Length: 123
Image (cartoon, rainbow, N blue to C red; front, side):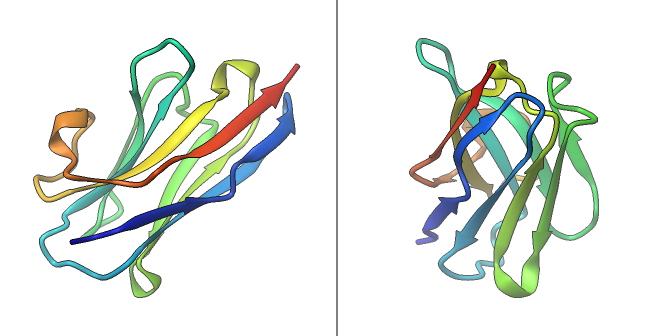
């Protein structure tokens, strides 16, 4: 069973940056992709970004493309999300997730989830 632990959330002013980290408890070779999702109050959990663990292939939602960068360090079993030019609409709980299926933007394709880390962007 893979456990995912996010860190790096916090309060930042609009235009600022944060880097989220997600550490996996173990390297499981069944995991093929990892991603970030977010959920704002009263809204559905939505896809943010994902990365294929065996190459540099990535996918981003239109709302974060050009501002956020997903990356991973396989040796450290750690996933990152660099968030720049943050806006109040980016305020949400951010979740790390792992998929045995492959690179996907769909929540249902992710089998493992972290507990989330709060990101708050003030205007």
